Length: 130
Length: 228
Image 1 (cartoon, rainbow over the protein chains, first blue to last red):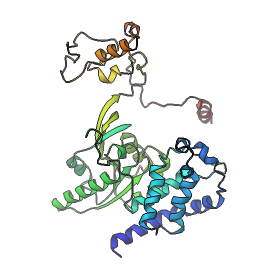
Image 2: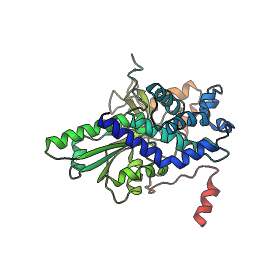
Image 3: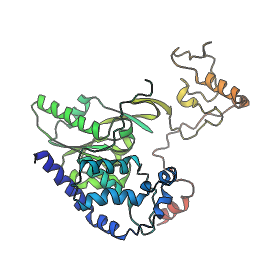
């Protein structure tokens, strides 16, 4: 393993450890009631696509990363990237009846992804005026 | 959204050249979207600064972190472990983000890496146009959705001024369309030309200091906090 990979792994572990208690508790207490979906404007405007449900996005991003300590495949990172950037704008409006801080979970997943060099690129290289 | 551009490298280098451990803090909000202060741009800045240090015979350790939104305490407070390891920070957020970062970590110098330019619209990738000066007293309702404060060279509230050229451009420059000509044309098309005849009193351009906005419906919540 290269040094830079080691550093990345250390930093990912640091992020996970910092939020460990909250992540663990959140994953444990989520009862999949899907009430949070009602508060997500992206869910509402995506014809109720279940992959836009805030809890789904959190469980399948930080949940995966936490359980595997950030050691997920590139394909999985791509899937996570889509969930936490393309399907979430982090407006922080999501509501959980049991008080899970979903934005915090998504933000943690984003921090981990950034350490792996995965983040949203706003310059798609495509000009509107071709 | 807020649009910003990176400061000249030399200016940033001059601010941080005396430090040996520098943390560049990007922002995942507006400055990421306008391609000025996201992860990619922050990494690039560090590389360029590192080259400057090498050229000048100096040495410094650079780190990068991106907060989701630097204008939100919840996210700026989240990087305390990284901040404790650095000598100074470069904020790649707008002026609000840089100030909040400096306020959150008072013992560490925070230097702005960006110039906050304006609130604007996206014309194309990396191409933006100012459309709002956030004056706090929106006039778009009677100007057909065209802002005279931003688009008129003289920011006239009652126009046009008489300097409109026959081709609809402004006397200041033929390249600038006369905002009030555009307003006239739009109002005419909407059959609302009476709007242009109303005289509007000057705005209160008084420096009110840092403004506080309490959104409608939230007044009682913050009134209570004040009483405490």
